[in-house]
Image (cartoon, rainbow, N blue to C red; front, side):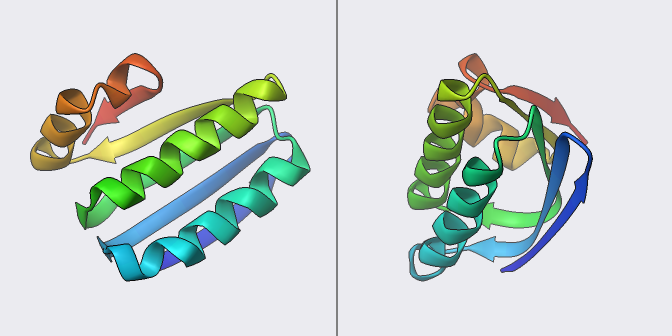
Amino acid sequence: MDIKVSENEDRIVVTLRGDIYVEQTDELLETFNSIIEKSPQEVIINIKDLKSITSSGIGKIVLLYKGLNRKNGKIRIIGANETIMQIFKVVKLDKLVEIEAS
């Protein structure tokens, strides 16, 4: 997994590449916690180059959602491939977060 974070005023873009396995979710959580501390208005998670994600990775996205929601921020996920989009729908992440397919 590769994580790239770029900031632009009140928006932060997180680009995730590769595969997110359980072993890597600590790094993802650290990144998301540092983002929550900055209280951005919007976080965009670009997953165009993400190949797979485990339930643990999805859990970290939910934690980011909850942390930002408490501070009136929002999340948008862009670039979801068909497989990942189906996973997000099964776990009903699409009910919490705006998700755009690739």
